[in-house]
Image 1: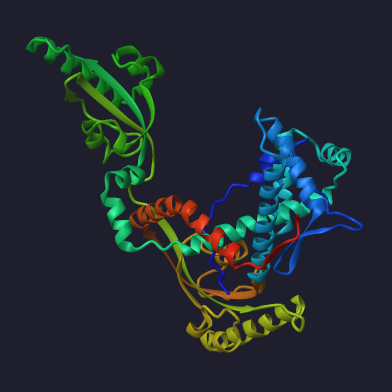
Image 2 (image 1 turned 90 degrees about the vertical axis):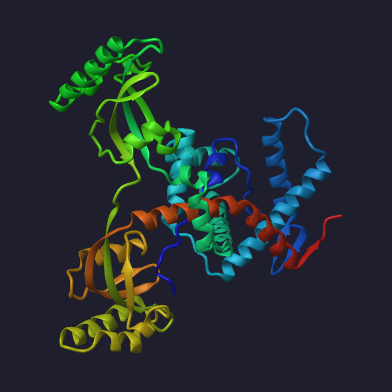
Length: 433
């Protein structure tokens, strides 16, 4: 059991497609139906193939003037259905389940996209001979497949520390991980042919503006009144820029500038500049509160229901509070194989590493105290917070960002390799002539 969350971001394609009149799925068939393919322990029915092919054909008609041959289309759709069956079978084997709340959120996105109320959505489904229950089943399958794809493929991608070092050292890596600055700019222009007196006058004006800004003058008003930059009428606001996108001269000035601060006037070939760090994303010290905790997990089963699990943990909590050793009881009772041998110790954890129920209980438990029993996706827990600290995670966050970029670039290639592999390994017998 792992209570640590896998950081995955995925897009739900079905939310984009399942708007009124654009459903690409079929209601479950009833009555007699012909099997067109056997896939491991599952089957694809002819009615499913017909309905999916018809829905895809209708969607393609709205996008392309020249449509594929019907036989070619049916073969492609059948292959799509076969792969879906293989993926759903794997998801069942991995015990991947979708919470009803996730399905509710997906339906809400569908309604928002179609600008429909719940009643209007249900009526629209009914007009098409479909049902809300059928829609929920299809969304459940889509989400299950997405969870499988993201989880399994991400685990196949291994990124070494050396690869991260190489990426961070590259110009591409420096750009991707550089902080973003919301920049204000005032320019006192100096012509290329300017004499010494003109240059001195421009420098004097820039210094006067800087002094006014230091005294509390509004940057935008000073830019509008004095700047020769094209963004002067926007209050000198040149928007968000990555440090790597700015001229090196600007980057050097901004690198150590705190939010809200302005630079002293500095010279370039164009004249004298004053920059303001209006806002900043990334970079600098990133203090994160970390928690060191340990826990005992009891899973529910056919012989251990919720009430029994809770009562067992209450008894363990009472023993610990009366002096029993937490680590010893965790080794004897916890069903978290990842932490039980270390006495339930989870080490130092940053926000977002655990499932929400665990995070909430951990945040609300004082140092040294034992929490009340609480339920998460994995079962029932009690936990003890051992320590808390604030840690500068800026370097680690940069490395995590680099790792995510590398993973993202490899995902599509690894995904296709995985699809090919599971398709080849599956037992498939096509009955379609």
